[in-house]
Length: 297
Ligand code: KIV
Image (cartoon, rainbow, N blue to C red):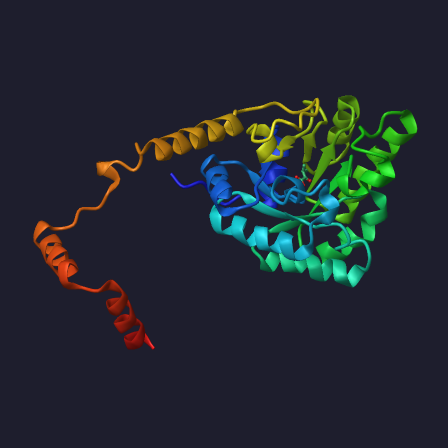
């Protein structure tokens, strides 16, 4: 039976019913289809694609055009999950009008909502987007676009004033109109307090078991590149090893002449082959090639 389309309203209902929300990133059509078939609630076209798809060191390098390109591909693969586009660095904090316009471009590309990083300081940005009928997901804690301000990928909210600020930030995002808030790399006790303090779902990544939902970068949880292994990450597969194994077997088969075998080849009718063989006996292939070039020009 086809699953009904996920909406922001349904996500909020899930929180009220105490049902966990399952979310993940995707960056292309093929993975998006697999994710959608797995009945995941929400797909984030994360700016983490800067690293996992484009090979940059951090999220700061990815551009609006690249994010839009990947959002379009993901949207083609999704029938049911809610699609959220992650707004890249410099696309929403420089100018309010540009922020709303850029958010709108994600919607035109097929996203149904956008995600932006920041706390109380982005209250007017969230408000302006919501006023323009664009649904917004917040993101506080370790916000990777502020990596240089933080001095690295460090856990946030580790003392009382920092934790209190995170709690108030979440409250302000709720007041500005977000439909959900990502809590990244914060102590679980603070994530628990935030989750109880706001009416919209909290989606954790490195924020412990008391959030209303969870998100992971799909390449990380599948074990595609195992060089990145933060404390919060759990591998749910060993896809990188499987891919390496398949590529080694392919290389081996081709080199040994085992693949392609007869069963992978297309058959040519015997009588037609006789015609070609006979023609080949008399034909000068250089002349035939030139005749065809002249005909085509
Ligand atoms: O870009 C991303 O993948 C994210 C998630 C980790 C929340 O922002």
